[in-house]
Length: 252
Image 1 (tube, one colour):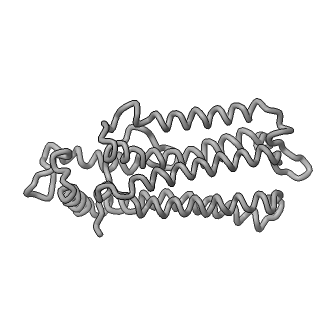
Image 2 (tube, rainbow, N blue to C red):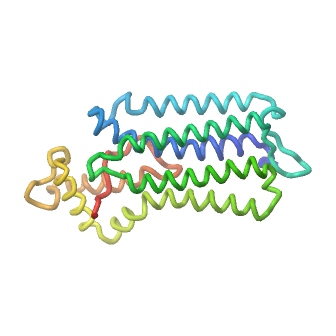
Image 3 (cartoon, one colour):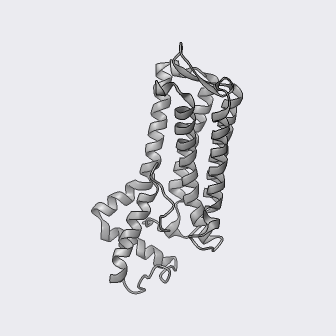
């Protein structure tokens, strides 16, 4: 059975392409804003994606090395127990890599805590970091206190449910308000954001009239494309590098 192959599903899909990639893309989102508002550098440049690229290289190197090593010293499927067993040193290296990834994410989020209000995401990112760390603490403790917890249906169900709920909450914390307003309150949502841009002194950068609460006719479609593209950019698996530097409006 394919699911008995622990490395593709347990290492690559769940940990490297799942948890690590999600945290890396959330960090990239924050670093985009740091690159523009603190370093005053262009949004599209080599330096913008270089840290993310270096992390991806490290992640791939770790995965490739783990893939070529013998299962006896990494992870292997135990037929009688129907679980994947992780060798202690290898399991420790996995959790070190996960914790370093999350710590980098928190550090970058902290670096942008005081950026302009129209692009400030400190509240959402604080909640997201809390959810990720809460899940990581629980999973780390569970793996070391009860390493064979998958054999316990209650613990297995609890761990799986917390991971699933946490992942969904990360998604909806970013997407819920923009999706609702884009569907049911488009003009009011746009006006509030334009007003916030004006208060931050960003009229010229975004072609906002100083006397009206809406963009000019030429920019109207431009605003719509930017808002929708930006919010669709950061999904769990469909996040890309081609989004636009646009922030949902703050109303408080």
